[in-house]
Length: 60
Image (tube, rainbow, N blue to C red; front, side, top):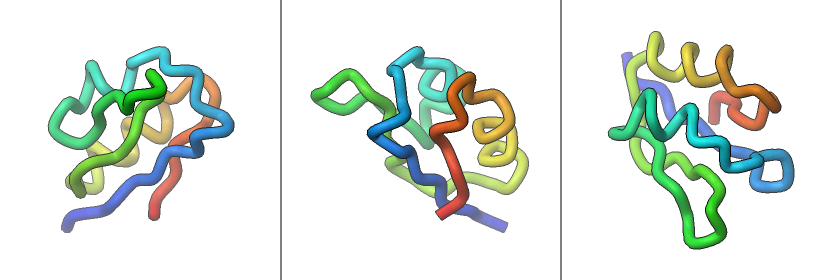
C-alpha cells in the first residue's frame, strides 16, 4: 500500500539522508530542504521516518 510522507520544513536540516535513500519519494526544494514529491510503499516511508536524524518526516 502506498503512503505519503510530509517533511516539516521548520525542522528539516537538509542533510539529504531521505533524498539519497529514497530519491523517487523525496527531493531538495529551492531552500535546500527535503520535500516529499511522491507516495511510497509503507516500508520506504517507515524507513525515512525512522532514519531522519531530526525527526522532520512524518506520515501525511
